[in-house]
Image 1 (cartoon, one colour):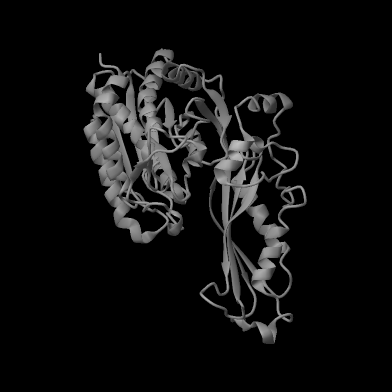
Image 2 (cartoon, rainbow, N blue to C red):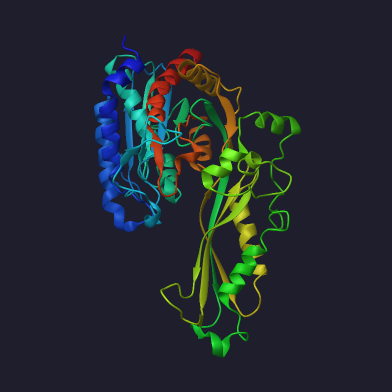
Amino acid sequence: MKSAKTYITEHKQRFIDELIELLKIPSISANSAHKGDLIKTAEAVKVSLEKAGCQTVEICETPGYPIVYGEIVVDKNLPTILVYGHYDVQPPDPLDLWDSPPFEPVIKTTDIHPDGAIFARGSCDDKGQMYMHVKALEYMTSTDQLPCNVKFMIEGEEEVGSESLGWFVERNREKLANDVVLISDTGMIAPDVPSITTGLRGLSYVEVEVTGPNRDLHSGLYGGAVANPINVLTKMIASLHDENNHITIPGFYDDVEELSLEERAKMGEAPFSKDAYLKAIDIEDTYGEKGYTTNERNSIRPTLDVNGIWGGYIGEGAKTVIASQAFAKISMRLVPDQDWKKITDLFAKHFESIAPKGVRVKVTPHHGGQAYVTPIDSLEYKAAEKAYEATFGKTPIPQRSGGSIPIVALFEKELKSKTILMGFGLDSDAIHSPNEHFGIWNYLKGIETIPQFYHFFTEMSK
């Protein structure tokens, strides 16, 4: 039988070219102007799954953007793996910070990616990592080495909360029945340090609005006598953290999972260079909650961040006004045992309570999800561990991610199956940022490793 390495070498350029074509489509789910692009991308994913060997592929309509479903059944008595991914991408803004157009993919070498990386929006999150699974299936079906049944569920709303996914899963439990969910929408520590994501933070995302006078006012005639919504909003936001960067919302930490010193020490064994971290994002020092390390702050501790803030005049030149309204978008990353709906309610009540007289406050919840932890003694984790050992030659390190994939908890609730997170991106790949990229070596290594997981999971399930 042909090895994965041999097959990948023979088809390397085609694998890269196909991904580049997919990355050219601006499937931005947050912008309704790109509805046609999302439909086009769903069609492209459907075609790729058919060519990879799926016996059945369909585009399933939802209240929002469609879900692409595919399956190949080898033997109903064998295990079934459900692969989840998403074809939508983040908005590329700010465009002026991109070194090349976000939807005109280019390959460039970097210090971290000497073999080259594809620079484009969605290259790492998640088109590139999703497409690894398509090509891994192609290898297994083309060489008659598929050891189990496989289902694909590729959605188009992950970047805006996956609202339609819940609707779809609830109505298709039998169709989606599986023994394990496999996702590559996370990362690893470094190319020579493989890791498996064992924890994800939850998320609560809200928008706040502060309204003062019934119109924009002349700042000379009214300044000092009327509450300025922008001033008020910034003071309110600043009050959400104390001098130790501890979140001040009453009850916010009531359900936070506190890890033992032993668990924290184990996490500390993961390689980490503070100097390299600072250099990569060009800052002088880290910043965060007192009493925790950098890696703890961005994984096992909850956070509250302003993702956008606006109001008043921001055009060229000066316009001396007191704006009638000010706005901000705020996200809270949550840890196990924190319920995102409860946190959203706590935030809304607190934010409304600290508003001074003279302004009105409105809090609009957008979306959220629960945190998730994968036990490292589970069958699926051990199978993934063996897969990495087979292709990297070393045991992967378990690590908790600061990111959120809210649908992971949904899968466990609705489908009664565990999820394994096998990501091949790097923190430096600039997901959600200008100049997002995905290393070609990482892309191909994922295609090589995924079939190993299929093999070991099937063997260990007997």
